[in-house]
Length: 424
Image (cartoon, rainbow, N blue to C red; front, side, top):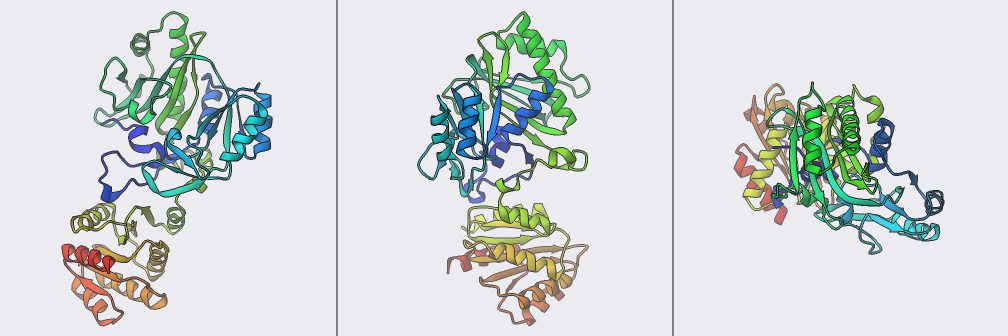
């Protein structure tokens, strides 16, 4: 399956096939704002509209004036398709066209410092802190171009789709019409070859000097893609201008999180204000927290167990509010932080701690849970399931602690009990 932004990383949304019980959740990948990605493309030689980042309506007015009047104002958000954004005052759409400086200032006033939500992401809203003011570039046609990884064939791929002015970008990559969409794979070492450029040129219907322009653009894109350890570089839309040249009107770049040490400058661009606050706080304590749509909070050790726990809760008719992966950590301090993060979500009506003891023994985990529960007020029913090394000892410690914990050794019974308690 080809990894694509509209399916997997647009706004950090997991996948379209995610069951409702598990929600659409944030992926932990670094995604750059459109303005940041456009700057990288411009610096590499890709044609990009002139643009100015504005943080106040007055800055937006001055930007529109400096760019010649007609401009596009784009809300800089890292999730949710721009067309599906809804502002708190009723404004619909994160990309707005204005025709003069005063209109630019007025429109910026409706966008900046306003809460915004997106279709399909009901649990999160954020504040738009800045907008990108870009000049309008007249074009003949629009395309959607994605450079990503074909995970089945272990190679880079370029996906190109025809885009109409009113076409939702997320629908483009699922088009079945081969005349409107095509995928081109190529080798990491070979990069953008002449044969590849010819194939793409034929699909786009370009010739002559336009082929050279396309070659330069694809080569420069691949330079960014490879040098920055990207998993996806998307230009949406890619405009074919009236002079036949191609320009990036909007773009997004997603970086492999494993590249953090290799790409310190890129990771300095991370905008944590656009992320879920609890997820950022958990990361500070080496915990992995993912927010979801339900009312049962989960603390687990391991991503696989987290997914299995979520499935078990769904099987018994419940929905998860989160999962928090404590990894191999089982100290009292870790559990205190985990409890605080999960219980800080007012939607949580019950908690399930589901731990498999391996290297970290279950009796040690039990002692950590008891210590944390004694030091803080656990405001919701708490179900604890332990299995693995010294699980019998751990379960006995929990039962003898007389802290009102619901102790289970069976996975299914623990999940069912958590669902029952969340309904009380």
